[in-house]
Image 1 (cartoon, rainbow, N blue to C red):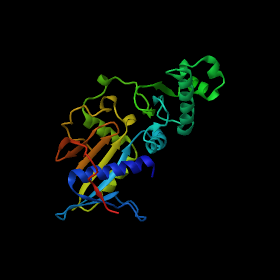
Image 2: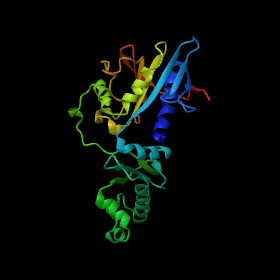
Image 3: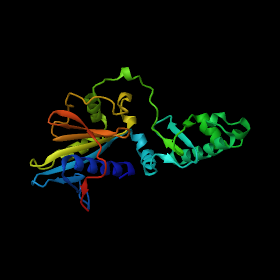
Image 4: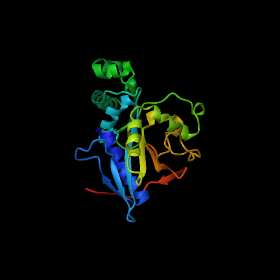
Length: 263
C-alpha cells in the first residue's frame, strides 16, 4: 500500500465514522484476501462494510505519496510554491534541485530561478537543467516558510467541462482500479450496509471541481446503484460529499477526530 492510499483510508475512517456514528473496524488485515477495508458496527446492531479507493492519475501515485508524507511542503526559510509541469515527477531529484534553487534565489534576491544571474546558473548544472527542461514553476510567495507543493497545472477552460459533478463521478469507471473495489464492497452480505469512499486528487478532476465551491449534484451517478452510500473527498476541499438515498449532500469536516477505529 502506498502512503497516499494509507492516508486515504485514515481520512475515510474518520469522516464516515463521524457522520454515521458507527464504530469503524479495520478488516483488510491478518492476511485476509479480497477483504473490504473496514467493517462498520452501530449500537443498534446494524452492520456495514466500508471500502476505500483512490482516483488519481497513475503516473502521479508514487510522487504524491512521498509528498503527502512531507505534508506537501519542502523545508526552506522563505516562502515558495512549486507546480510541476507534468503528472509524473522525479520526486527526490526535483526536491533536491528546488531546495538548491531557493538557496540561490535567497542569496541573489531573486523571486524565480529564471531571474538568477547567468553566471550563477552556469555553475549549477542541475538548476540549469531544471530550467531548460521546464520541470515546473517555482516562485516566491508571501506565505509561511517552505516550498508548498501543488499538482500539475491543467490547461483547461472551466466553461469547457460539464457542470454536473455526477458526470465526473461516472467517468471514474474508466480508471481500471475502481472496478475491483466496487466489486469487493458489493460482495458483502446483503444484510450489510455498503459504503464506498473515494479520495480523488485534483489531477483526476475537471478544473471546475478543484475547490468545493460548487453546488451538490442533483442526479444520481450511474454505476453505483448497489451502494448504500458513496462518499467523495478531494484534497483541496474543505468539506466532503455523500450520496445516500438518491440525494447528494455536502458535509462539513468534524472539528476534531470523532471516528473510533478499533485496534
